[in-house]
Structures are given as C-alpha cells and as structure tokens.
Figure 1 (cartoon, rainbow, N blue to C red):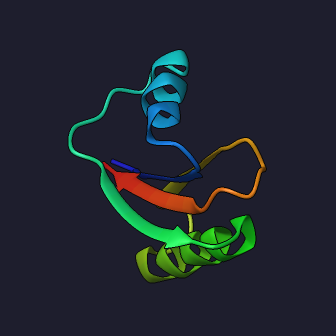
Figure 2: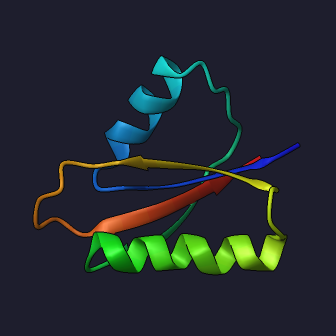
Length: 75
C-alpha cells in the first residue's frame, strides 16, 4: 500500500479534499507547523526520500495565504 502524504493550511481541508477524491483513511499523522509552503514541501521531499521513490502519493491543499502549513501522512 502506498503512503499518502500532503500539506495543508486548515485541518478541515484534509477531510473535505480526501472525501472529494474518494480516498479513505484511518488515523492521520500530522507534522508542523511550517512557516511556508516551501518548507512543508521540503518536509515531504525528505520523508519521500526516506521511504523510497514510488512509495508515496502526494497531495497539497491550501489557500496560499499567510497561515502556517502542516503536513499529513497515512497508509
């Protein structure tokens, strides 16, 4: 099973986004906050390198405003 990872700005966005894509999930692990989208993306890059290429499906959900970003992951 692939690991699902993503970044978001507001927690409500995760469940709405995943439901709209038909992605079921169990417990979600959160990381952050990250002060910028770039730093959140770097976190995803780091974790993906540790897991190995092709093992991660990535998602990004946010308003691109000044709010901090968070990461999430689940199987």
